[in-house]
Image (cartoon, rainbow, N blue to C red; front, side, top):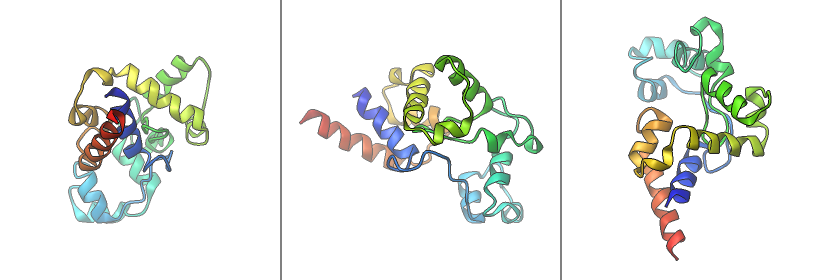
Length: 163
């Protein structure tokens, strides 16, 4: 059951195990839907449309150990790896767990590190204890983005696991 949950979450976060770096190339409408808290006004969203670095710096500012929007931390510490770890604090904790210094871009360009970030995150945040696609999704994503796909992947993997 836990393997299915882990693979379903990683599969969704990495776009079917094909993307190991967060894609923040949103239209203004996508920003308004996905990051409503940070782009409540269409005029603001239109200023950021298709500007991934600016988007990252806005949505990840002043949280997860990141500095303010101007610091550039949002872009530097955006999601990478199978589970898309995000934030300065998470990267620092992962480096400590790994026992060596790495740069965030190393995670996206190295399958071994991409997998290890997911394993670390899973263990660190005790996701195996949650036993709920919804609860795990909230922990990873902060909300329920992609919940239908995550549930579908989980159910498919559970059927495969029981055969």
